[in-house]
Length: 228
Image 1: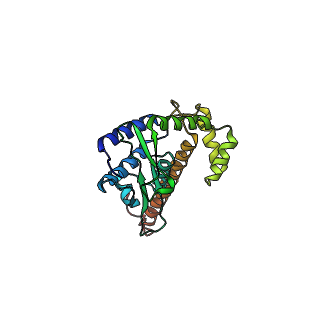
Image 2 (image 1 turned 90 degrees about the vertical axis):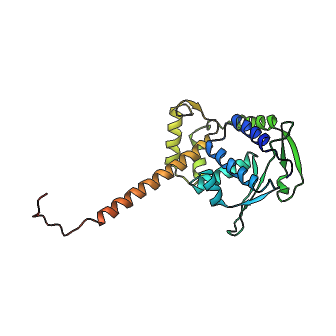
Image 3 (image 1 turned 120 degrees about the vertical axis):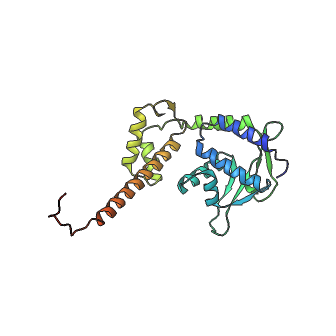
């Protein structure tokens, strides 16, 4: 890809970040890491990445979080992501040019990820508004009922009980994060709920293993005649 202006691109994409309520700091950190790699490779049409390297640059410690965020950036049209199932051949990334002089974004065609053809020009503001309209149209700020949450959790291979906990918690605080900020996408919030639940399970497992290890170190030949 030619004529990438480093400053204009970052100014434009950060402006878009500020208007997109679907993003969280992890999305932004991941995008910046990918942009830096793109810059290091002198802005090619597309480039291959190494997951461990990108996770290190973006300070993402969970593979689950990494895959979720990069797929969401792809879905929300911040980039094109073509995953690779070959350990010797990294996934392919194609970045969009946000830094055009007339405030437009160049979107390569999804069918032409390996070529430099098939670009369509879309104004940045229109792209942002389209994302907002889609969110409002799908009414993702809250589920229709508890059953919709249960179905979503089951698709993610989570039990019905966890879905009810999630629904009752946010129903009780008016579907707001921390009881203050209105939720924009309840499904994304649900995925974060699942990630935190996984982290708690991991922490409990590590504590249990640590306690068992300490117990194994206790001597069974204690001399009870010794003073305490």
